[in-house]
Amino acid sequence: MFLVISMTKITVSIIKCDVGGWPGHSSTHPRLEAVARDRLQKAKGSEKIFDFEATHVGDDLNLILTHQNGPDDEEIHSIAFDVFEGATEEAKRLGLYGAGQDLLSDAFSGNVRGMGPGVAELEFTKRTSEPILAFLMDKTEPGAFNLPIYKMFADPFSTAGLVIDPNLNHGFTFEVWDVKEHTRVFLNTPEDSYKLLALIGAKERFVIKRIFPKDEHKLPSDEPVVAVSTEKLVDVAGEYVGKDDPVALVRAQSGLPAVGEVLEPFSFPHLVSGWMRGSHNGPIMPVSMDDADCTRFDGPPRVVGLGFNLDVDHNLVGPVDHFDDPAFDNARQKAADITDYMRQHGPFEPHRLPLEEMEYTTLPGILDTLEDQWEGVEEDYQKAETVNVGEVE
Ligand code: F6R
Ligand code: MG
Ligand code: MG
Image (cartoon, rainbow, N blue to C red):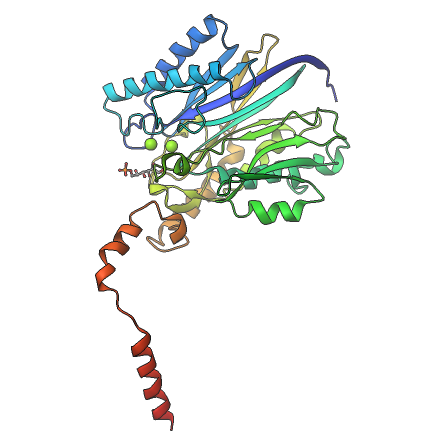
């Protein structure tokens, strides 16, 4: 409504990495954030970035940066890489668990993609007021964002503006990645909604990567309004090294979902996969920064929501800790109740993930140890059938 476009294009990047847990995989030691702030302050001092926030959820160190270099920029990624290397050294010194866990290579070659860290970046023409939210998850995978982001941008029962705001009701374009085939497709809402849901309901494989305004929208249709990190550590490492613990950036207001519409989907603690040993389904709990440390059964999976504006010098004005609010108490209580319920299944599906998602755990090894003990059942089965037939006669 009060939108004025200036021509300044800026980039907001979240680059995150698990460089060591304190203790186990539960939390991030404050010294790691201190190392990050120290190095990012230097990068800010030498005007390589406009501003930064260094924070964590669970055992993941998250860097939120503003700059003018666009996504996938070598200078920006090398700043993040330098932070993670410094934090890894500190983690080793403190004896933290899994020091350097996600930093799968120490040879930086222009980009942190494919090296372990997760990345979500948005480059856009800055509006006079630019509300932007960063969602940081731990103990889950990128597909955990499919449901809430679909609701924000395509579900009229969640986002009222899709129905009652003429600036929103032509819908959006979703960029969906097939993380197995390494391909992508663009689908428009509302017209392709059912196809979109058919894909993103399979959240292990199809993930929302970005969302764009359509041509009819007052915002440029080539500037994304959502970005999700989709790095798959499994693909990067070639073997299981932990879930990806994704992050997302979402722009809000004035032709986009309002901040409250962006937050609304998290009032439902939907089931996501990850949690203990990256091998269990459980509810995602929206928490404040004070509760952003994993505890029960290394979880339950958590999400924090940090809100910012960008000032005239492109500094991050914030964060506002959005889930630090009794309005989300019911969601937390529900998540705690679902945690009790799911845990009672112990090693049984659907609490434990199905076999095909367990292939990076010990199960193939267990099957190997039993290799010599398996015997065919076909002969016995035929014999049993013959006996039965005879008995009937
Ligand atoms: C899940 C996670 C933890 C670990 C678990 C076992 O993503 O990081 O649940 O899988 O604590 O960790 P290790 O095998 O390192 O003892
Ligand atoms: Mg860890
Ligand atoms: Mg983690």
